[in-house]
Image (tube, rainbow, N blue to C red; front, side, top):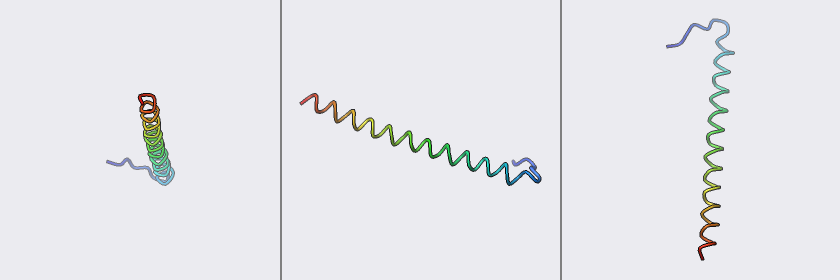
Length: 50
């Protein structure tokens, strides 16, 4: 269900699109950094065990 935005439709939908893009990029960035940190931690822990 979409509200009637009238002449502001382009601005509002552009803002929604930009927000979705930025949030998606941040989620991907955080997940990648998490994977790198977990791998680094696992490597350090395995080198300490040996």
